[in-house]
Image (cartoon, rainbow, N blue to C red):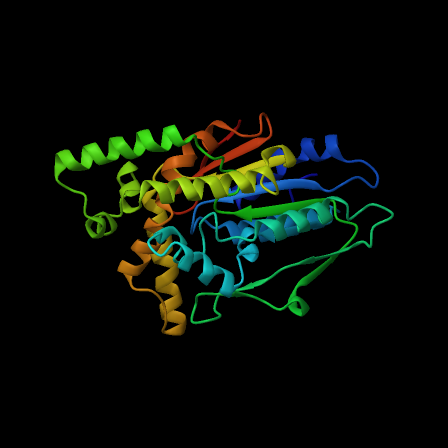
Length: 317
């Protein structure tokens, strides 16, 4: 697979060069598709990158499909039930965190995708779609009639999502990080959640926005994901779109929201964006270090991007 001259994004070219030998090694007649995980921070450009990767693969004669973790969010009534069951758990107040996805449905869909090329299968798989604008932005799963039908042949399935590839931590590790953050905040006299948000915090102190038990719960839900559709052993390769400065996540999301407000007249305020991003920071604190060391030996590509989302460097782990 040779990079097309039309490709101007170095990230796409790097990913294609990384995939080329892996695709050659795994390609077999009528075999299951190649499963690629793409993980990226909020606002890092995942959706655009996925579209370009799939377009380039099609030009090279492949038959890829992309699947977003976002499309597996729970239906609105189940999201509300989850939030009501733990009224003080801020991680469940809105969709996004582990525990707000339909893991059972994801497991079913990905098992069907693994068999989509088999002769005795129906050669068609329905992919759910999610309407993030439903119910005043709280979101809801679209009716089954609006799901996307995928037919064989499919030789590559690309799963993208912000926490794809994350692995659960030991409870003792979470507790130690939490205790250290609590001690540091007590010594500095700063344990106020609102001030953390306005400072766009990215360190262990963000854990203090939540009860320790709620962090344990999200970790347990992530562990369930990793037993099924997000099991690293089920991926043939992993691409991680990362940055050395997590403050960029706040900046990227603010940029996106400003553009949305300019285009539609609606959107979150800057403070609301900061609070939105802040809810994701505990997961980055708990899981990014391990992910950066690699969860798929010799089959994981880490691409580091700067504030402008340009590739700075890349590593195969």
